[in-house]
Every structure is written in structure tokens, then in C-alpha cells.
Image (cartoon, rainbow, N blue to C red):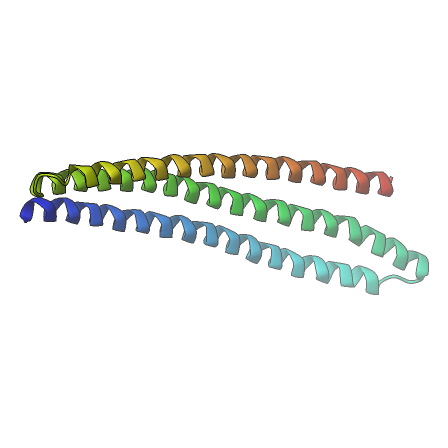
Length: 179
């Protein structure tokens, strides 16, 4: 009985450590997002104070129109920068989690096969068929996950490329309008 208990304990410890890695990556991503939001809020308060002063100091309609025009473009660019940074943080965190998840699935499958090997040596004759069926199922699940992970990675690349194109079109269009 001790033959199976030790590998199971090691397997459980490995899974616990993997869960802690997932938590750390998620917390780091959350922290980065929170820092971005706090910095953006501080900058927004400062900019809004400056903009309110500029609008209040306008002596006539022409100065008011000029002040409004000078506010819109920087605000748009800052909003675009915030969106870009938030997307970058979310994308990096997702990629790290996907990588960890893929590693964990591979380690889990290796550990499960190792446990099956240990169990087969401790079980009576004739249980080899069940072990072989389980190994086949694990291999099929691993292949399915690899295929899915490749699709997700490709979707991330496509999304990033599309976002870059849209951003280029929006910023290019706004520069033409302001010229």
C-alpha cells in the first residue's frame, strides 16, 4: 500500500505547487492592471483640473472653442494608450496562464501515467487492459488540448494584428482630421 501512497503524495504536492503558480501569475496581472488604473486616474484628475482652468479662463467663444479643441485630441490619445496598455497586460497574463496550464496538463498526464504504472504493478493480473485504455484516453486528451492551445494562440495573434490595424486606422484618421 505504501508503494502507491508515496507517488500519490508527490503528485498532490506537484498539483498544489502548480496551483500556487497560477495564483501568483493571476495576482501579478491584477496588480499590474490596478497600477495602470491608479496611474490613469491620477493623470485624469490632473488633466481635468488643467482643462477646467483653461475653459474657465476663456474670455470669449473663440478662445473657448480653441480650448475645447486642445483638450479633445490629448484625451483621445490617452484613452487609446490606456486601452493599449490594458490589452497588453491582459494578453500577457493570459499567455502566461495558458503556458502554465499547458505545462500543468503535461505534468499531470505524466504523473497520472506514473501512478497507473505503480497501480498496475500492485494490481492483479488482467488489469493491463484498463491501464492501456486509460493511457490511450490520456494521450487523446493531451492531443486535443495541444490542438486547442494552438488555436487559442493563433486567435491571440490574429486579435493582436486586428487591434493594431484598427488602432493605426483610428490614429491615422484622427491625425488627418486635425490637420
